[in-house]
Image (cartoon, rainbow, N blue to C red; front, top):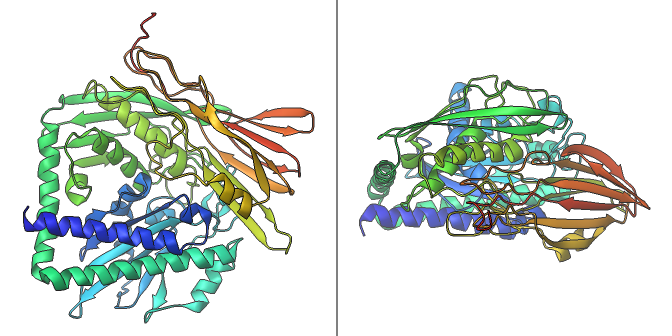
Length: 520
């Protein structure tokens, strides 16, 4: 094994250790249990060299978010010094949505800036009118939460108490925010220490050259993998649900010997609803699908990202302009972009791409007042069925594509929040039929014990996921609220108030089948 491979693996494990530190230090179940966080290492120019195997939508966005943030630092004539960290959750800079708080720290060696460590973590509430801050009725960015512009949260090695106080006092659960943001700072400190150790062990020159060679190697492996792909342009279309109407997304995917061009011309314009996906999300979802289709084990860094060109016209739902709302773009539009890319790739690398998975993160946000007068906020994404593939049935009850989180265990949720579960099981028969059957979705239901609010941002309630080779689509999702003897069905995006004793019943979509069933 050559030196750059050893250095590359060591750097990746630094990112992994940062993630372990973040998870173990965090307060919220969303990070501590669901692991809704991601970590990465970049060189002194902000070029991604290594990432941990965390959340796909976070990871691809680091490339865009890091460039945006460093550009902002340069334009504002701000210098980052040893012992300083910058925080932001501005989606139009960080590249995802407002709940993903991003913290960047420089790594100095012999008095010179030689690298960066960075992490994102989904803070369960970042202010705004809705508990959980993913507001399905937002008409602009400011109705989603508190925008934190890039600002130095750590100075001289210590958290700036004035800035931190401002942030916490605009979040509805400041104690949880205190613990989670401190965990993010601690994770970066771990990363800084380990990168310096790497420089000490191998030598600065050897590490920097190793990082450069690693990126070059990743690019070469990616291009070699493309040789087996059919060349040409492949078209796919799909839709998002804006409750009463469908929003069209279109992709033209062009594969050449030197790379892949993803052109979203024909996709609808931005809308005053929170389904717009900032460019970082669009790039991330596209890159995820392409990376999944490559046969080689390729490190996911700038070398791989460099083979991908994404063209998304400003002012469209896949590259909106500030201040259009974007919270749902990160969680739902990102799933649809991945579906679009995978569906186009199914025409290019036949027999490799599976039928569509559930196609929604099925975001559930709840909150209210505790007995002590303080607020609580709960956030969960709920898995569904994976699509079947050639030779294999789809997996049931699992997070797929752009989400890679765990679930919040029932025992933890019931301990932390005022509700209890009445069902958590597979939704039998929801997977599409075919020669290979799609995975089943999930039924997850609970009764609240205190008055509270509920918000939902989901999708695939009207149109099931795409099916390949003659398979059948998985069953769409649905949600009901039972109050007393009445039971009401809701759409895929809404906010409402719950009364103590109300039961929420969630049915997530199944994955689609692959190939014609033998009986057909």
